[in-house]
Length: 304
Image (cartoon, one colour):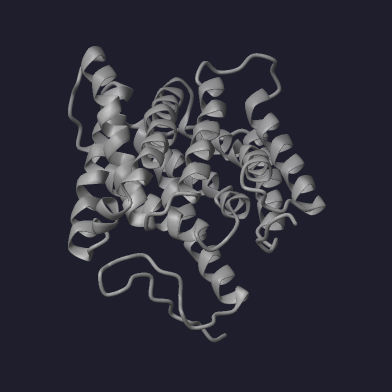
């Protein structure tokens, strides 16, 4: 298969669309591969968060600020930082992305994972696909096919199996974990309409989000952990690659591709954290994975 390499930035480091013609399949393939790379990184993240020994606000704030410190040299040396001065009105959008997708979402994610398990955290946050379909259809006017709806129902059924585990009650953190992806998707929808390069969006998102989290972090007891360095690196990589992915394919499709990440988390959690996996976990993960494979075959487009 012939692969076309697309230059993302001009001589001044400004994000541009390719001038030469590229087929829809080229962009679709690139976006899909980028999303699958993010999938692998996200599979490791819940295990890192679960192992965190300090309070969740401190961990989330430190991780986001470390990610921003990794990304700022990239946009300064690459020249993308100029677009902030050229289009300062877009800063409001990146602030909202940082508020929803980092400050609120990572607080819920960190606390939810601490109160639940890394396995539940990885699987339940894949409910993001449902929120993605809803927000993409309502706000971004992306096309959602009948097959995508059936796939979403399979995902919801899989989530139900993981949450219920044959019982009526929920673990304390499960509700927080189910709310987490709603705020991720609100942030992603705003980011998709922000006229900055993907790496600039990721940099500002973590800067604003990390600073917003400093207040509750100091109130609840600020502390440093080396795991925040690992999480900061994961955040910097996943967000940069993620925004490159959704610039090429539908937000709903990119989100669905991430769904099998719990499979990797399950392996890591068993080996490193000693967590157990039940038949409900496996059945739910199977449904979620099947739904993901189906939706990943969708072609991106908008409603007419």
